[in-house]
Amino acid sequence: MTRLAPATLLFSLASGWAAAANLSIPQVADPGEDGYPPYSVTFANGVVGIPAITYAQPLHFSALTLDLYTPGGNTHGARAPLIVYVHGGAWVNGTPRGRTAVGGSWPAVLAALASRGYVVASVSYRLDGEAHFPAAIQDVKAAIRFLRSHAERYGIDPKRAAIWGASAGGQLAALASVSCGVAAFEPPAPAQPGKSQPPPSDVSDCVQGGVSWFGVHDFVTVPVPPGQSGPAPYLGCPTPRCPLETLRFASPVTYIDPSDPPMLLIHGLADTLVAVSQTTEFAERLRAAHVPVETLIIPEVNHGFIGKTDAITRSATEQALLRTFAFFDKLFGKSTG
Image (cartoon, rainbow, N blue to C red; front, side, top):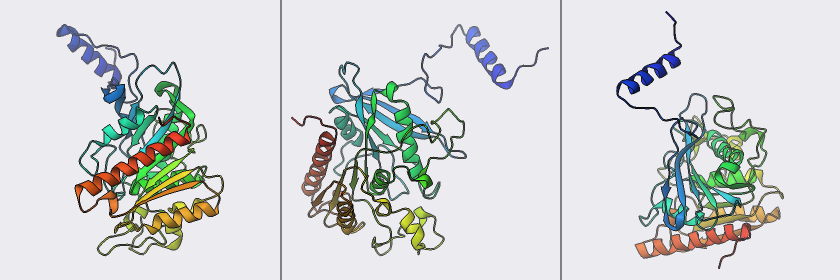
């Protein structure tokens, strides 16, 4: 009797069951990397969302995924700039989806950005309960490389990419913006070479612009509010007092140089979780290095642009979104009319 390999035996059994039930197993023309047929959802203005695309499979960890939003309409083969969004959550929680500060759909916000002619990716990354820094920034860079390596498939212009994040995601977006080519942040080799991401040397992780909303930009100077653990768990420090070299290693301010891309920094003036000085001091350091930087400091709002009333929160969120969208339009030469 011929012995079948386990995978062959499984397929044989499945095919036999299908034949007995008078069914067939369809052959998917272009399955995803996890073998599941691709699926999508349509948002307003014809934007197509493709959820849960696996972009990397770090060894001994769960697969990392991203949601992709692609502009609708006939683009006549034109490639769109890429914008990568990095969620917040104090490096301990959060997902690529969720809701806005006033209860709206965050995927709808990202779809609205895509409708302006961008491919937008909202990425997951390893949280501090899974892996300590620099895992998160390695994941963000792996996502950028994955998307560039699949530029033709997703209609991306690989020469035009920007990154945007809020809170913990703001720290990661700022760090990705200023750490082009930093060897310590190289994504690790994939668990299955050639399956989840290209080799690190094949594709650039550099971006052409960055936006940070109320992010930590210097772990050395950020005040830790009473009752908060501060950055120690995220950075893998055994005590709440991290060594200075560890704090500097994870701080975007450490990597500033004149080659960095233009940046937009937005913060609430009444932020009690991440002091507004994190943005103002980072902006000063960028300007000193002759890096183009814009800032928007919004009065009356705390972390997350939360104000004392829903109206204040909504107004602040709208200001930040309009300024962010305008920054990307200016960065990539798009009409704002």
